Image 1 (cartoon, helix red, strand yellow):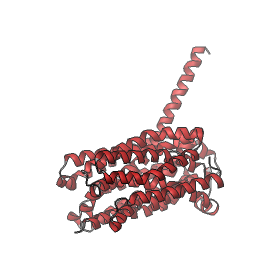
Image 2 (cartoon, helix red, strand yellow):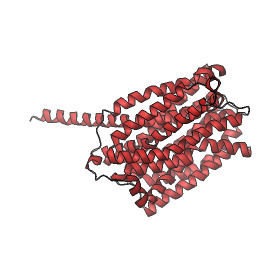
Image 3 (tube, rainbow, N blue to C red):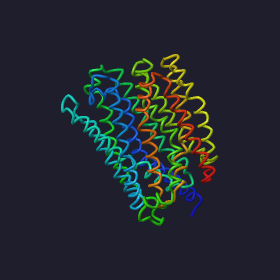
Image 4 (cartoon, rainbow, N blue to C red):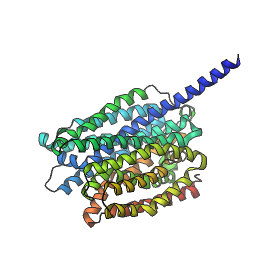
Length: 430
């Protein structure tokens, strides 16, 4: 074979490898993006949804009912994590990924097409709650299966590959924020409440079939096919790996509470800071761009210098500066101060959470990896994520203190920093 032929073959192999990696990232990230997109849209339009589906005389009670439905739907996530995680560890990552995105699309479609309370009465909030439960169940298995799929295809680049899970959340935030900013700036309140809020949900409805098509065309991971399968992944996980599950939950506390505080930010900006509704969406758009672009870079860096070192540095900075960020926003309420605070929080959050999927994947063996990651992730997001908007709204209502979210986030940082140190000392996480 000539030298030219060898060179051409090598170039083709590199191109194929890059194409394969890109296809894997797209196939796994699109479901996670759809999951988070719908969550973000629901949170961003909480005030509108409260008047459409939960109309009561007190606006605060109406909002709390809407956020309560958001929070309670998270109770289905740990159940979905165990069911779909176990399915993934027994039958394969691809099968679980395909099933979860199909259910997620159905849940999004139900909300997009749901008649209002004025049209069908109490069936409307019941329908919204049912759709959120379905989405919660399907989302329960999404993170574990997709993260395992990514790192098992490229085990030498776990940090970089797995970080696209959270980068896709940044992309979802960007897209949802664009919808929010455009719709609140161009539509009247009546138009927004009448039909405008449905537009981003209808768009989310269209993502599902695309993701389903892509996922059906990908191959199962070689590592899963080689691994010995567990007959009962849930039983094995809970019997032998409880400490690792607890570590998975603990490291997520900081990033999850920050995530859902950012999700609540448009409501906070309008109700607590008195800013135009579009201001909150502009700020979260900036946060989404940061998370989308910075996360893979930090994930790549974590493959070089280690996960724990990066997480500890970002966590300490977060603890020290998040409360002053809320002081700044409330002392000088403006789009500029809101942007400054949200951008800083997003920078620290992206740095802290980029290494987490790889760190979690390294805690569990292949035979229980999806179940372990899915269960730990969804317990963490249920307790410290899904209830964050409700907790923040209730804290502000009870204390009258607009700085309460800052204190809440500081406590979250302490819990996560303690857990990261525990993982380093007890489990030798690097």
